[in-house]
Length: 413
Image 1 (spheres, rainbow, N blue to C red):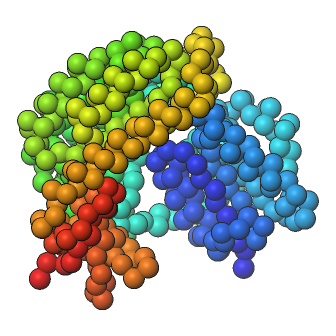
Image 2 (cartoon, rainbow, N blue to C red):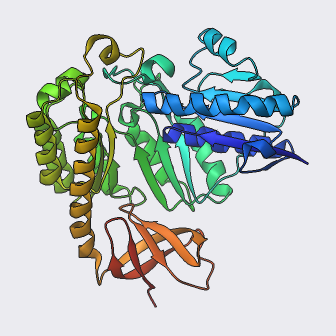
């Protein structure tokens, strides 16, 4: 028996690619282990969006060198955004001579292609529908590492989704760096609503989500389509990044706070119970305390259902790293980050109290520590106890306890 170990950091696209690669490796006869020193094959799936992610990957790689000396037959594969496109790996190859394969984002090693098979699929699965980005936000490396926007043809999306559902998927998330700009590069052109319509027609698929969305590409037609299609969840990720227009301008986000708030009003008008999730960066170059407090004001005004928050870190190769001074001290970035986290915890504690005594629809995924866990249509993590096998089952739960991060209750009789 041969053994493999996969290490993944970064976005949902990386997570999907690791899952796909995992199925191919297991088809080749490998068994997963959770300690790299026990492996015959190690895959490093990396990210470069933030400096901290790159540093973690480099440190992890350096720790693998002794393993290669102990086991010369060990194969090490490096993939993800750290590698970049072909021709951009010379420095990495010189630094990490013990790595066997350097694979650009989304590419699988040639030596595994002969072992291809149907993907192992979870109850909640991802289908990539778009790769790359055309926006060139000043803090982001994605357009340089993953390239310009490229949409997957609609018939290919449908084929992959149907295969996943046949293998047990009950929820599918359509995935892309800027998912609501899908289809502009196709001939004939399509858009994200065509993807939602196609997925909604698949029998046995229970739920549909899509992420991540850019405010400049959000349309009323998309939100009305969400409201009309029964399988599309009342849940959207709309990345705002900052609550101050000057900071947004320096980020090259191409919308204003006022425009974002208009979108929020429109979404809540059309889908009153919609859960709105966002991404934010604190401590961006030049962000003053007053500008940061504008972000705090936006958070309190909107009442997000989740915030993916990060302190700004320079990303070599981006406009911000070369032209904007990283002038917010690290301790101040951390203070701002923790302030957002504390405020958001208070907001969620109050928001989730509305579920007390309510019956919610939950799609259950797995059982851990004696409790079944699943998510509501609004993506609220929900726990219950049951002797029944609830994996892949959609049922209702009566909520009797809530926290900032989860709901708890009993199966409805």
